[in-house]
Length: 254
Image (cartoon, rainbow, N blue to C red; front, side, top):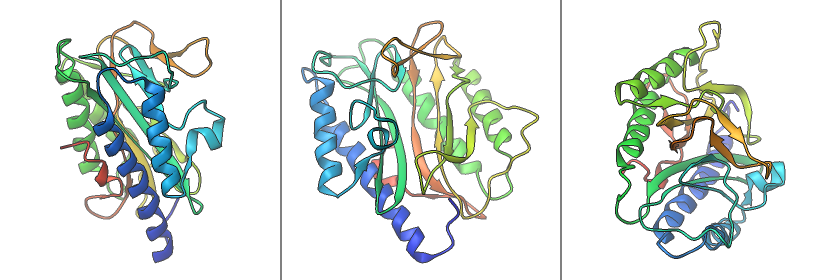
């Protein structure tokens, strides 16, 4: 959406703080031995305490309050009572929600307990690439140029990007224009970021795969060539200078 009033900015700030705080608290709640359903229920209670509604549930009928993807799952993992978290698991939590007609989105990947499977380099690359990308975004910058930066930085770190998942506009609904803020450059895309618009910028950094493939459950995505994927995401407002990071309270860069 394009922010044109103080009330709209305040509405976006509020819902962004809600999803960011929910993500932070869910990350702190995560531990070895709990199920992803326990974790999701905890997140759902936090959203409800703010009067917010789960965006994936409200928009798509997703079977959970949040998307929780573990190990080889690239995105849209379904919370499950039978999925018990273990030491060294790579987990991604993606929290998006609606409050008073405003929508925001954020996510982050991290390791549970000790990094016995050496996932940290992939996590660190994803965080760093998101930070570099966001720091380059301002009104007038080509969306394709940010995609080029993301893929170039991923290659420098020895990784790939998932090409069929993307960031997107957000604000008055979960997914708005621009619809494809990709992790690579499509030269024909001449679209530019516009000042005062709100967008969700997210990385999809992978060890082996370049395409996310939907599984039989109709939701869970897994890389086409296996391996692992990390994602980090902030909702931002584009300005003439550095963007306003609306979901900064998630502390995914800490």
